Picture 1 (cartoon, rainbow, N blue to C red):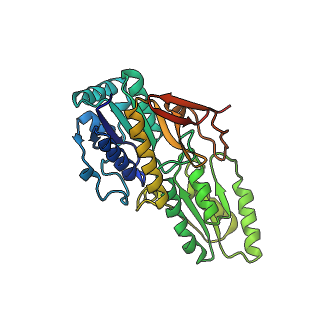
Picture 2 (cartoon, helix red, strand yellow):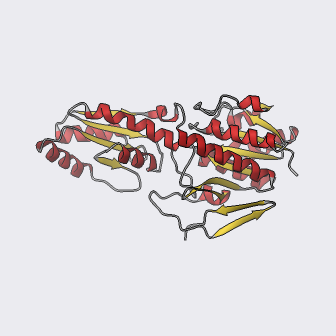
Picture 3 (cartoon, one colour):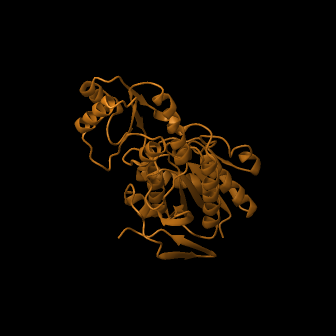
Length: 329
């Protein structure tokens, strides 16, 4: 029976990480288990910045953005030597299992740590990009999309083309959702080809017919918003403004959806690791919390708009009976 676990947030922060970590801590304590927080992501783990947490440690957190544990990207952890050092730091504190909250890079590192040293790992997808395979939702993605669409009003107040570059890396989910909900005329994503010359010609025709403004949302993985804006301006002679939102998308108060879903996932993660379940990531599939194989989550690429088949299997470990997101055919 596991008596001590740890929780760490890693990689880029996302709104709702605090809610998830809070749920992990409160659930573990309610089950009579000690829990330690790793401060500063994998860097903090290697530096031994690990402290025991109480319910007071996570009070007044659920509504706050960012992560009270702090986070960082750590190249040293991505080496076998770094992971061996991290494992020794966990052993020294008596930590028998670890909950990781982060994106696909953080989850990949966690998978290797478990594979090489046998420590139980449960992951939670914390990234605004919503690019983790096997789950319809990642912590922070809803807040980020809502932050982006606030620019719609200022875009429509002027007679111009507005090009808005958003995050997402190789996944166009954030651009697609914010573009649809913001009424964008064009949404450029890495998953689909597009022709800027054709788009520019269509914009010119629309303005001739009385169109007042055009909103173009560009996923960072599809191209540079500045280059797209320059091309449109040169080929239409219409005033064009470019906004690259950057890290503002990660900030702010988490939405109700992010608070609630992150809390659900945090509770599931704590209960699962205490029951002996390991090497899974918890996410959502068609509105239900599901467990996804950790290796599958970090080795498969999520496809924009793909509909995952109905779950066909279950994981049975200890007292936990959990739905499993199926592998792609």
